[in-house]
Amino acid sequence: MALLPVEDALARLLDSAGTLGTEEVHIADAAGRVLAEDLRALRTQPPFPASAMDGYAVRAADIATVPAELRVIGESAAGHRFSGKVGAGECVRIFTGAPVPPGADTVLIQEDATVLGDGLIRANETEAEGRHVRREGLDFALGAVILPAGRRLDPAALSLAAAANHVRLSVARRPLVAILATGDELLPPGSEPGPDQIIASNSFGVAALATAAGAAVIDLGIARDDHGLIEAEINRARAAGADIIVTLGGASVGDHDLVRDVLAGAGMELDFWKIAMRPGKPLMVGRFGETRVLGLPGNPVSSLVCAHLFLKPLIAALCGTRDIADIRTAALASPMGPNGDRQDYVRAKCTPGDNEALTVAPFARQDSSMLSTLADANCLVIRRPGAPAAEAGETVSCLMLRQPGD
Ligand SMILES: Nc1nc2c(c(=O)[nH]1)N[C@H]1C(S)=C(S)[C@@H](COP(=O)(O)OP(=O)(O)OC[C@H]3O[C@@H](n4cnc5c(N)ncnc54)[C@H](O)[C@@H]3O)O[C@H]1N2
Ligand code: MOO
Image (cartoon, rainbow, N blue to C red; front, top):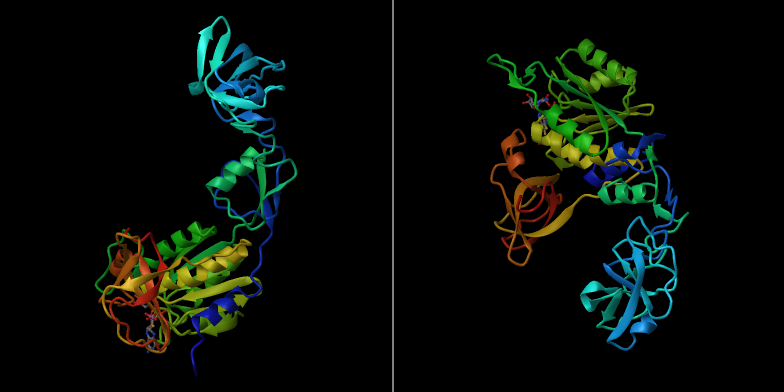
């Protein structure tokens, strides 16, 4: 039977994945969270016509012909407005951010004025009306939608929300991701492995990816290849209220690959198992009601590549937003052979050239057990199923894992 294409697998995974409800968080704790509803300004910014420069608040008509002498009748500083009005032949010393007093319509920067003493200045340049004046509401007006629902609260969004006087924000509840490693051979880092043992690594990368994507994570540790032990951990994840259960390993066809059987026995509804992808063929997706299950293959590279392609977008969808993969085109530094029938994600390194155009060098070794090559890669060259051989210099698509050149 033909394996499920990657795009179809992703569409099925994301189908009906909506937000998990909302909660309020203090703005200081809201970084990376996703707005649950449109955010409206609670104030107008700037709340008054404000000077954009240090200088003198003047009437443009008074300096239409220069040089022109003006009388300084007061000062307007940020936080301390001048309470009077500027009349003909008058001006007010003003600083950046300060309210422009009534009567004045322009700010003459101080570089264009000479202080004459006795409360007088001389304007040496003309200035158009409204110059260096930020009109009231230039940034946003009371009641305006400043950020849409679904916007991730990045640095600019957080500062904007704060400027609009929000202190608590309604955000999508974080999905809870429970991660379970399986395998008799696995020990946690810091252990002294026996001759047949290795260190369980996948949970750490997958947890980091899930956290960065906006999830809360519980690490269920390592279950041995034992039906009862794996089932106990799955039950623990469900009791903890996991929205996504991620299993690592045991997803393939070997005699000790028990995960799928255990999950099925526990009542998981299997959506699909095995997809047309390399690495990551044994990916398994199912659900216990609203709890989604993502069975990632045990090979470390397969686990992380699947987490990038499937776990990240699923977390984003459950947060009410979209994960848009960073895919760039690059010229191949060396030729690639024809691809097989699975979509291949080839570990590679992208480098920007003089004109910013990218060149990508695929690595010779593509074993899905090799974390050293994955850590060295800054991108994955996407090779379509059945893609013909590609010459050096041909353009290919690269899924970025880090910045090019990094
Ligand atoms: N006869 C077949 N054999 C395999 C097939 C197949 O189609 N037919 N598929 C291969 C592919 S592709 C993959 S990927 C692996 C996936 O197997 P599992 O998901 O069952 O993973 P395991 O067998 O448990 O482990 C594979 C490998 O990864 C190591 N591992 C597992 N968990 C971790 C962890 N948390 N941290 C670090 N390393 C881990 C494990 O020791 C094994 O070396 O199956 C192929 N076989
Ligand atoms: O597809 Mo497996 O994930 O090649 O190593």
